Length: 264
View 1 (cartoon, rainbow, N blue to C red):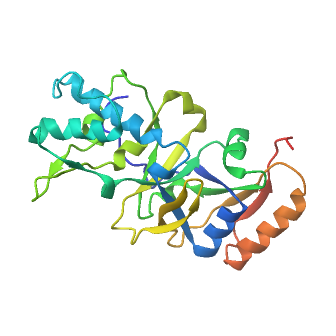
View 2 (cartoon, one colour):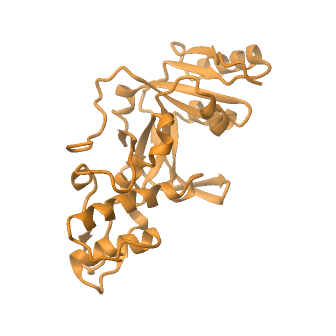
View 3 (cartoon, rainbow, N blue to C red):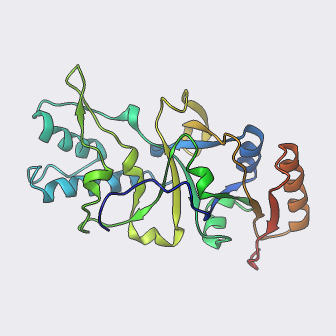
């Protein structure tokens, strides 16, 4: 990878699929919004740590960090970044800028996605990438990279720490969410990434880790072009219910299809 890592163009006709369960499908259609989950409360909280390690490794290769600083937890990594800018008494403050994420896949009707997100009875909402790029969030294809890779891209995609009036260091973490380990390449993931402020107040819901912070990302009139129901039993019944739900939101032009995977 070379050059600057930029958001996706709003001109693309690619379809990105949001795999979810029945509650998620109903919630998106009924509210006209995606739920973007705080990155630390997602199923794999190590994703942000991976991005942080990549950033710190890039700084180390440039000679801007002392040997041994880029080890330990994400907090320690961010502190290492702060140190090289503001001295050893710098205190990084990054919680407020933590990214909130909604995930999609360019893989249509993928069994791994049904297993991971469908939870038995699942749905996949297909949106044109160009429509996602107009929402109040940054839209990126995930870059699957590992530590040690040649990543000049990190110098522009990831912002450096900045000092505020109190002398604290605020770390911009949004871009850390665009990088994952190469072992996840088959996901072909696209992400909407937002931070508090532009998307309104932080809300809370129940999740696997208990109370889970999230942001609403309004669809602003964008509609899915198609909805798939997961493989399994009672496909016709589930397709019929999906059609009724879509029609209730006046999403009449969205087609409904069944997964073609022979899996129960």
